[in-house]
Image 1 (tube, rainbow over the protein chains, first blue to last red):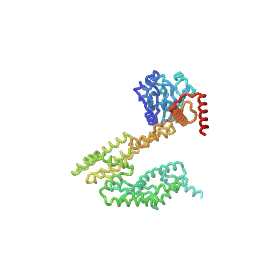
Image 2 (image 1 turned 135 degrees about the horizontal axis):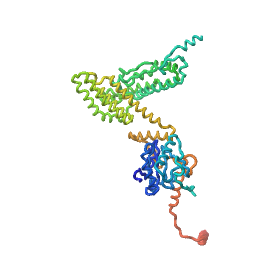
Image 3 (image 1 turned 120 degrees about the vertical axis):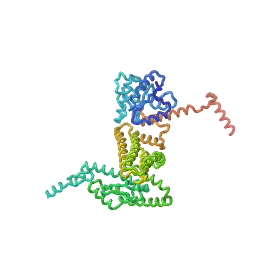
Image 4 (image 1 turned 90 degrees about the vertical axis):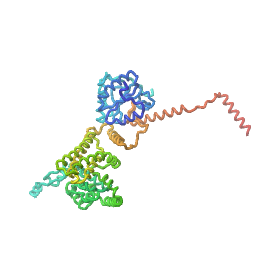
Length: 151
Length: 380
């Protein structure tokens, strides 16, 4: 599925896309193209990227690439797939009732869920908010456990 | 006394700024609607003055064909300043703005309509500036005198128009590009007219010229880029058409030119307002608004081929709030950089080449030390 979207493998490419996406939400998916859950997520992203193209850009990042390890560490990516949102080079957080507000971990259940999330982020960002509430009901938010750092 | 007051009140006075008659007397200038329109009024005139100030800083020759177009309405003195018979662009305007009469009128205006006496300097030209300008003009004249041939090209470039500050670097290229197209245009217009045609043909041909210019304008509006280069190329078109000659050689009449120019101006203004309204739609308080504006400017510059100081060093990191991070997001980055440094230190420590020594037992060490002591005593 990953070939339908731009895949970034260099830190410079990620820098450029973050810097040059202006007044649009940037959706960065960190993961492996061959992972089962990633495949599901990529499918949803690829199908809905056109629908959200007016207010969002979607790009994939291959976490196995050597050059992007800086970002993998910086964004604390421990579980894949992880999806990070940006707006005007500012990180957008989402409070979805899970441990990690900084990124979306796991896949979306359906296309509309992803569109809703991106829309909520776009609307929040346009109002000057750096953190938004998740518009999805809790049963459609993937659950996971985070370990506290250095434990 | 009361009667007099009433009489004063009922006397109508015309406010130039609000463009209406009122019987509010001197109080009128403190009314919010008046102050609003006054600020607009001033900004409009200020815009006109920026053009004049541009020529004050960069004096240039005025072409005779453009003299009729290059004029200024002084809102304070209520007079039209034309440039007929002046050899430099905006010469009369500059002289007028520096004159004592203008200062007097300006002060009277500010007293009558408000606006603060501290703005006097914004709407006039100081003596020091005009002295500088005069010296520049003199040097220009002396330069132009020996090489009259080359100054012609310079003139056509510089006196392009004051509506748009021309981009001199690109100007030559654009002139080259547009010349072919326009030459054909002119030849089309001029050729049949040399055979004493009737007026019908004249008007028809002019229309064809207009249509061409119109198509150019369409190009501009459709791309929605108010590129100064595009503007200059169009202005060149007008200049060339004008340079085509007078009534006898079949050039379009000056009033026709002016309307074209006005149309173009209107179009350009529309485009700019469209752009502005597009910007206004976005919330100025949205996330990263300042960043977006800055980056947009940079990207625009990059598109034009300008070299932007690339602050995108390889260690650039976006703003990010980490999972376990409390406090501002800058701290996230600081923490990350600290971690990175620590890691590199650990790496360098672990990579330090360790000297491999054979194991020496404690007893052996003691014996060695003992031997050393004995040796030193023997030496003594």
